[in-house]
Amino acid sequence: MKSLYIALGLTFATAITNVQAADPLTGTLQKIQQSGVITVGHRESSMPFSYYDDQQKPVGYSMDLCAQVVEKIKTAVGKAELKVRYQPVNSSNRIALVKNGTVDLECGSTANYLERHKEVAFSYSTFWVSKRLISKSSSPYNTINDLAGQSVVVTQGTDTALLIRKVNDERKLGLRIQSGKDHAESLLMVQTGRAAAFMEDDILVSSLRAKERDPSQLKLLDDTFGGDPYALMFRKDDPQFKQLVDDTLAELMSSGKASELYTKWFLGPIPPQDITINFAMPAKLKELFEQPSDQASS
Image (cartoon, rainbow, N blue to C red):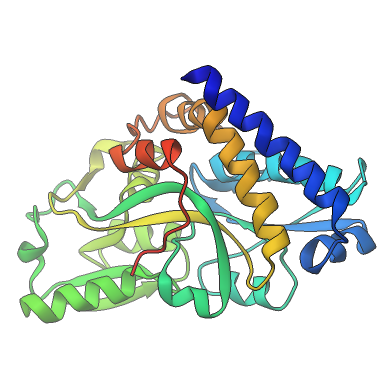
């Protein structure tokens, strides 16, 4: 079976080269060929997906996936020395920067949410997440119901705000919902007592806790909510570019390279402090590696 996956991966790689050689470049690929530059959008603190190391270099799981995509783009546009420009993005501006052409490929921790398809497009899923709350270990909170009447922070521009409001309304919890400008600020609001808990994707809050000097000072509450796929993001209505990105990811998944990258970033020590998140691969992600899909979450 593994040999079959490898064969399929080689087929995908050949398809990318052949399609691009046969068809005139359009959309994003044409733009990149003409400018000689691809602009990659990255996050600043979304460990282990896309964040700065101690040299202020963007690194992470999503960045490694995108590096493989960039190599295929170099072949497609016939520019071995293609310049890669890195553009920091956040939850509030990432979609706008892709739409207006500033960013060609966003490599962060962005959920493939159906509503977002009105503005942008997404690749095959690269990760699967659920939402969880993080609070001080000294707090009396173990579930979201324990937070009734308290302040909960979410990071602005994320779909988490929609979920927490929905849960708040359904359970009549009377939560006071605040916003942090990025994940680091949202967690700081909990640590400084300005919010009782912070809700975000399980892997992100796990990562934020892992890189603290004393991770035992923070705890994840018991509840889990929803489930969403992460994906790479780019401009919509660009089938040629989407095919290249998807075929590259499918090749990485079928060859086992994507699993190797997962082990590197989620199960082993990572920069800049050699912390280990020790986040086992979700069962749903294993399925997605076996059968790649770009299905969005509603």
